[in-house]
Length: 201
Image 1 (cartoon, rainbow, N blue to C red):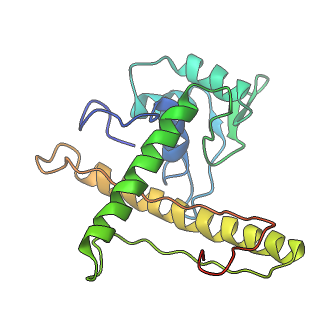
Image 2: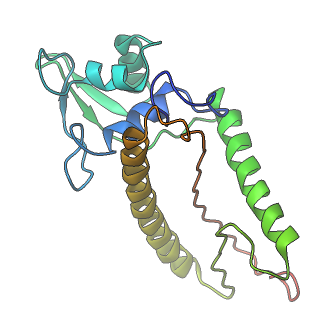
């Protein structure tokens, strides 16, 4: 996410939809101190609203367009009777038929490859980037289910905390001449029913 109208060009796949969701859970006034998203009026004369949220992220797209698309994707709920909007998902995950999927794939894979290559080139010294993994064999399907659920929970909590802090720092440094850097932290879980053979782990 970046400040509206500032910074470098967006990396591939970083359109307004994921940035709207990231800002919504990033903290006040759209989320509470714990990061829980607040229900928002679609339009409000004063205080936070869905329209003010979208305008904070980008003035290049109409809030109604963002609303309709997020509703279509099942990420938010709009209650016309009260004209209120509620967040149903904390992350924008492109569908298989979404054109943004390739952009996300390329951006995440590219940055991960850059980090891994920099760490490899630094060997035998420690690399400049944090890159760790936990891997175990000889696990039952039930154990795999439990570990995947725990990993999703812990990764989700860590990424939410990073999102909140990154947003606060970006807002603090908006307009600063040195505010040209880009940061990406990711998480992944992979599981297989086949044990890795000796020498491959």
